[in-house]
Amino acid sequence: MAVIHDENMNGKLDTNWLGIPTEGFGFSNDAKAVVGAPSFSAASFPYDGQNIDLTMSLHY
Image (cartoon, rainbow, N blue to C red):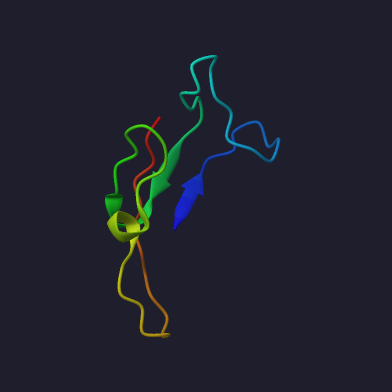
């Protein structure tokens, strides 16, 4: 799961001229984004179809 904080509400994750995000972002399992999004396996978590509470950290 990926989350962004679209601060200016333009519908996208804004980046600077180097491509580094200028708005908050985070991935499930606190997977790290080094040069792009983390792999699926790094961000995956078990899900059994029931309600689930997740806590995600946003990085600015």
